[in-house]
Length: 251
Image (cartoon, rainbow, N blue to C red; front, side):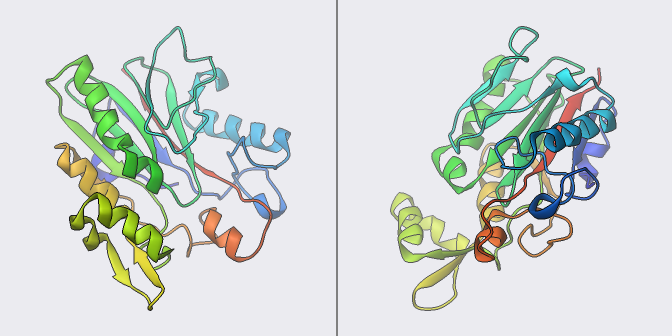
């Protein structure tokens, strides 16, 4: 379990970036696999999510998860919709007692807190979501509730810049959008670049006047701590687990 030094200072919230350690899953999914979309035994995933709920001191039905699709869609969770199926890549709430969760396996989990309006949220920021505006949309959604905001965000464990190899078409896609995006890439060889997803996401938050800190771990390299889509693909495994990051408003 990992924590943001910044978010830990706020007594009215509780958060955690869970590692893969602990839990009930076996084999490829060994540990705390919280991916409902994985091919893991559904009973084990349910036991893992119940474990997370108990650590957050909530009833299981108060753990709110998304069906994540690498979109830029943000939803506000309230007392009426928290039990419904949620299709988005960011969720926010003002309801105390609900725990919001995001699952990742190399993508960036972001936990956010607006201290002025007592709003918590979480964002699933893979390259597609970050590229298409999931971070901006989330901050704008908070601003829509109340323009007077003071938002803190913690950027959790994700694939590191030395591990994220991409092809030239990927690089060109970013540079066509803005030449400034060149700073997020470094050369690996004539055919490959290395992409700094963490910095790309961090800068998107900073552009929106969000104060940030990092829980800086490389999910690809730290096999004992994290699941990784890319590591599983490299090893030609047929599936992968997902880690969970959560936040709740206590009062």
